[in-house]
Length: 169
Image (cartoon, rainbow, N blue to C red; front, side, top):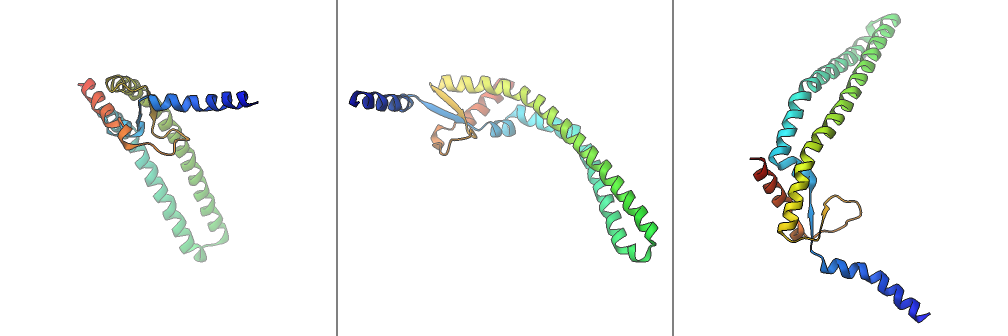
């Protein structure tokens, strides 16, 4: 019984002892995507590709709001048939707007995923290089679920961004 407890305690403590001896680092990949030269380039490409369509949707939304406001203001002066007709028109425009907006969101998500892969491969190479340079045994993602605290001194994000930018030239 005593031996079993000792073995259990050692088995539980061993992973923590190994982590103590390991050198660790972490990377905020969101920051890498936002601040690296390649990440900024990809963001600009996405903006150029989708901003005109998003602006068009914004105009449509404003038009729908205007129609709703006009109906609310003028409905007392309109016949019941005119009100029904306007409501049907507004409903139809809202449905078309929602359909177009949903399609745009899906397309943006798909392209973001594809473009994200273009950034992630060089980012992974930069993480590997920085980890080897700093003799790190393990590097984790900053936003990894379950991690409640990370010492800021373990953050290698800026080094990864510098390495990616230097490799991109």
